[in-house]
Image (cartoon, rainbow, N blue to C red; front, side):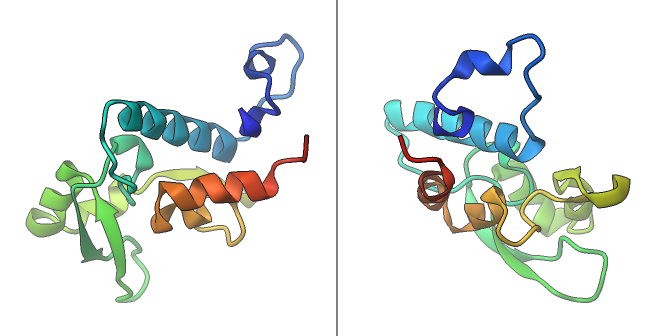
Length: 137
């Protein structure tokens, strides 16, 4: 609710500005994690390749960029964890990207200071970031 200024109906209001993709992704991740928590799942991490894949099944050093040999420790869903072993090159193709400057696409967590840049530290860190950036009531 903090991400949509307390008015979920504003997302559907005619003429209302469309929320940016980062906000929509954060809303989905937080809604899913809240639902999972209600069902007793206390997993604080989601897939670092694509948060829409769901909860993390484990962590692994992976290369998600075609540039250089840099690897990152990411939480991965079951599908991505299996791919990290069997076909690690596929993870680059699965990395969720969002619209960037000048029509480019950038990894969802790449822009420093963006709402989702903290998602790798866990969903609880995303919740804290949302609270930090939301206007005071």
